[in-house]
Image 1: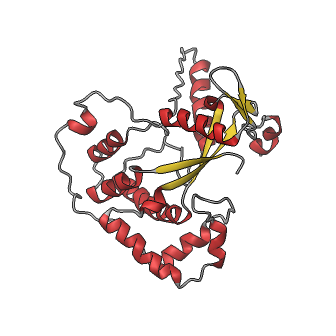
Image 2: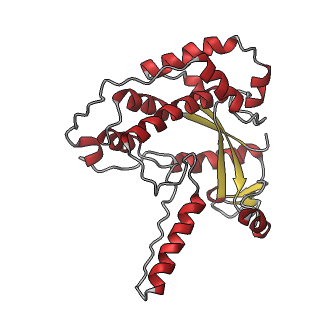
Image 3: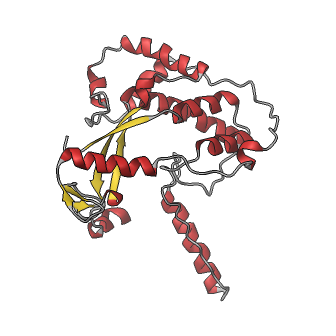
Length: 267
């Protein structure tokens, strides 16, 4: 395939991290000092953005939709077990020293207890606080000794919460499909859609215009730290304006807020 043949020309996107360069230009290799430098940098990256209010996403009059009382469908035991089985059994550890690999050794009877926990989470829009703890490891984007700003954070989420996220995502995608909120031109992060298809259609449009001597102008936009600096209330407000039921919005908000992480270097 195209990607199989072309990947040999790609350079590694990240590498191991062996040290930091601090603001004075000194090289720091002690793990404790590296963690402090990284924590100072990422605390600033993840701090709340300054939003000018009132804002149409959060302060506009609410629109009444016909699905405001719709609840999140309950999870069945068969669905839960199928979700667990389908997860890749990676051995990377989360903040509590657990991994998907351990699911191979967890007795199936325990999943009946977790089934009640997941359904209670969907009904009441609450999550165990421990499930919001994240282990963060850092990779160097280019050089193995670099400033914290040139590192790539990898967040290892709670193993049990990732099961809950998968269950919620199935229900959320079904809701989006039924309401027709995603167009066929949206290929990113969607099952059964490929980004390569959009790329080929984009090139076909350009070639068609150029063959007819029509002017072509393309604007590429890349939002810096789009996921790291997401405005939570604005995101939820926009979903509310699109007609997402309160039960889904409340769970998303509970999932987003009050998250914690710790940085591990050479652990």
